[in-house]
Image (cartoon, rainbow, N blue to C red; front, side, top):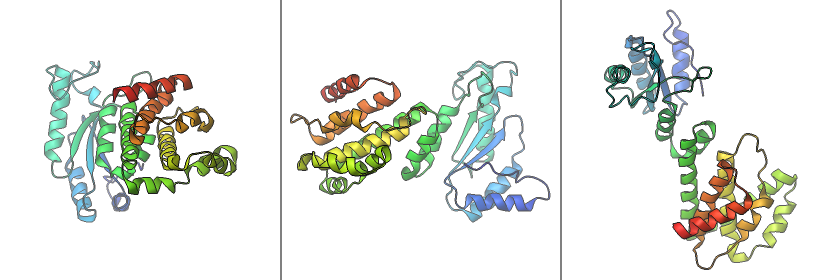
Length: 288
């Protein structure tokens, strides 16, 4: 994430050119405009120049500091600014509408935001996080979700990871790709310093189950890196290994993987025990 220099500074054309240069390799542009500053002509001119240099760069305008709008001393979120009738909601709606009209050609969305300050929580950050995820390429959404603190975004991304792997298990091409996955050796090296454990473990897996187990393990590791608590630095392969090996003749491979994935999401976000993880797998299998 780049916080650009002030391109609007007088006699600093070099800063303006630097920002445009940044934008040529950017995934997304966020234009932050303070709620109490109605001057947008310089922003519009800059975005027009940017469009001439960069094709189809997603752009979201953020109206910051909306807590300072009238009534000035009132700040008691949540506010339903799009439809609400409170004076503060109307003020926020007007501020957003003004920028949406002035920057309509350049911005796909205009969203209000108040940053966290001291003990006061941020407001509007959840909606902004979802907008960011929707604006960038799908291949880069997982990386962004790891960076964002918003739990609803991480949960949505986790569901996409689970769906991707379970779909992969329904196709011959997908299963063949999973069969070639080096994930077990990678995790073994990461946790023990050597791929030896991975080689020993894979020898104990029934041949027909190898792609399924490797797929579940790869999915589990992606979920771990997305959802883990900052204090959890190690992927505990030993703890989840029995569940990885577990077979079930009454459920298809993709169904088992789907249940396992959603149970893992709870395991890493709600800090449940391994016994509870197994119970949640059974719950998802019986309720899909």
